[in-house]
Image 1 (cartoon, rainbow, N blue to C red):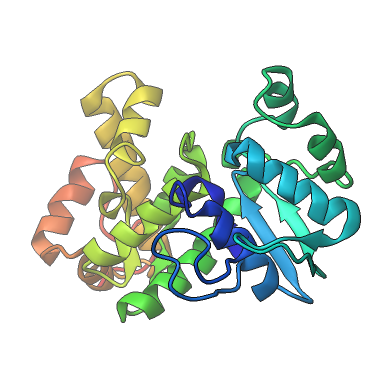
Image 2: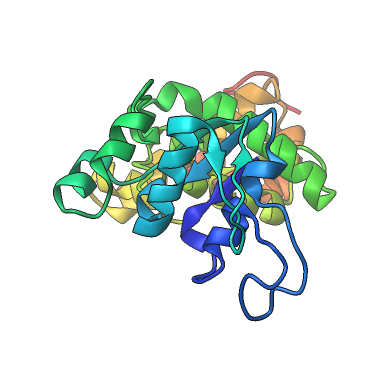
Length: 260
């Protein structure tokens, strides 16, 4: 089970995690099991653990110290048999120093610390992540599963990804919704990922556009074995328009392979 601590309603976080007895507080009309009980015999992932209220930090410490907890409104301890994983976007050591996180709980949690680097530090994961995300969202949206064109993949690899994997996921979801052809092109991606990145590198909008279009059309022709008719269909362009664009960027028709 996964629980994001940051979205737990204030005042209900205790019952959400540890459960409640009937009458524990106003509106508690029935007993209910919390996440710890529901994850019995399995794994419970607590996201943004640094935002857990101090009183609940003490209750979580008890779970880790002696394997028991007390539901809200109850006086009887329950046994907890659950593997606990915790995630945080803020360094817990700093929260401890600021007095916002219990030091004893910090050391209880810090048995096997794992650091997940930001996406910009593991760009080699982008192709596999993209394939997985495209497949998942294609099923959810009832859309055909599309592949990334080489220029689109290059744009993803070049982006800084300040929003990490969530930003990548949203960019690919947008591409699935907007793509008109059989592959995803840079034009289907958010502007800051495609043309804007090229403009920063090339030093000028027109130069960046021409450089990007040449790379795009060259990769497109290579991908369809030089067939201009097929390339026009994939790009969503009229064949005569594609010929004009190829001439403008210095790619003679058929340069990427056969003409036709």
